[in-house]
Amino acid sequence: MKEYNNRIISNPKILSGKPVFKGTRIPISIVLTMLRDGASFQKIIEEYPRLTEEDIKAVLDYSVFIVDHPEEEIINI
Figure (tube, rainbow, N blue to C red):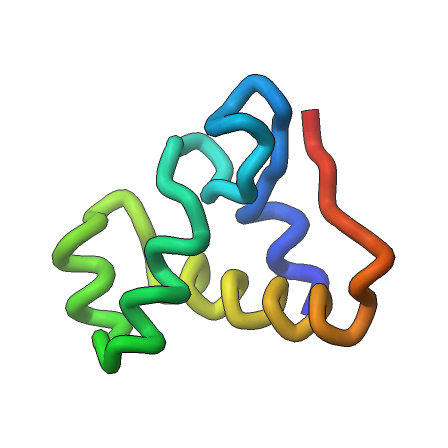
């Protein structure tokens, strides 16, 4: 479940610290919104070709972690 540590970062210098996919400026909130709206992994990858299926799974893992540990946050600078 710690796979998100290698794929998601939060840096105050990138999009005001919003969690993004490492090496991109793509906020994870975009992927979560697309999933909420019924987009498949393939559709997300078509829209954002820099992302992989593992990146999308990492967003879901990260979301579960945040729900289970609301007092903790990932900060990678």
